[in-house]
Length: 152
Image (cartoon, rainbow, N blue to C red; front, side, top):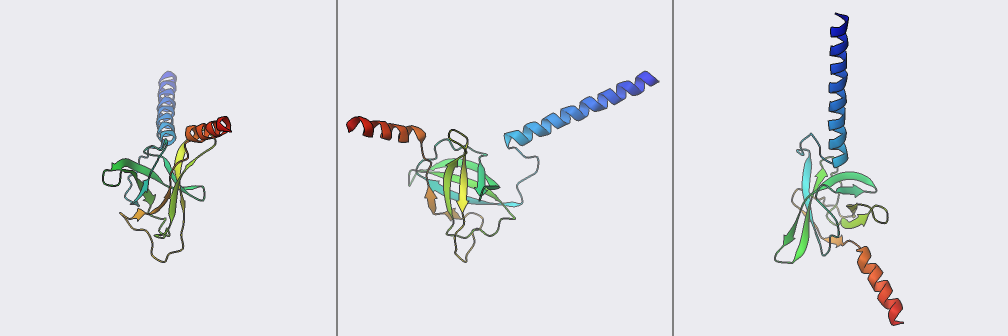
């Protein structure tokens, strides 16, 4: 009887450890078990998205308020269109807000930073942020610096 209780408790402990590892892996990867019904979709067009990827963070003042849902090409304007899911509780982003692609650290991941505007009308589901700033590509900056130094 004592061995049976020990086996059941070890099995329960192992099951709890496996569940904790699965939840940790989901959290680290950016996936969520919950659905995105409490969010709204906002688009932004960028000339260059650098290394931005789906499931990247969308932040406001450094606080995550959403994530990048998808990235596609606008065939008419030949620009990247980034679709973002913004948390439904963030209902105070005005239509003249701006979006820029930022990098965490020197070589870190890229994410979108939103700067709120001052318009009275707020962003709604399906709206597009017009004021955007593309990603700074480190290789481009280094090559410009090197070629300017060589030509002098």
